[in-house]
Amino acid sequence: MLIGKHIAPLLVVPKSGEQNDQFAIYKSTCCGAEIVLVKGALFPLCHKHKLPAGWKIVTLIEPSDQRQKDKAA
Image 1: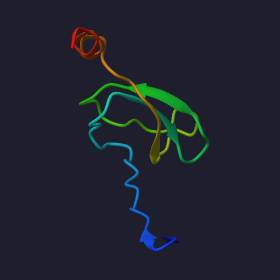
Image 2 (image 1 turned 180 degrees about the horizontal axis):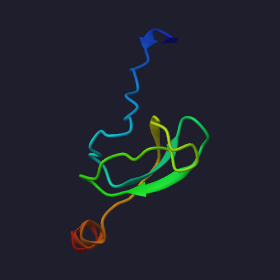
Image 3 (image 1 turned 180 degrees about the vertical axis):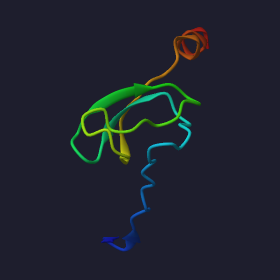
Image 4 (image 1 turned 90 degrees about the vertical axis):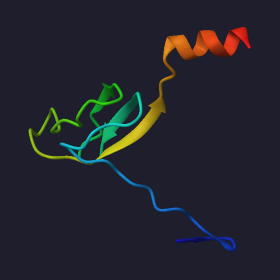
């Protein structure tokens, strides 16, 4: 997709069974169900449909120890 003169980057949507690399709130692409998933956890099946789903990031969550480091700096 073109936006102005730039090409928009492709968004990678993780799927059920893949490992999560960011602590965040995610929304399923099938029905909009939301989950909180820690870094390193596997993306689950959609809780509502019990089927594989894609998961879009809604909000990144910054770990509390990182917030404390940022405040000290």
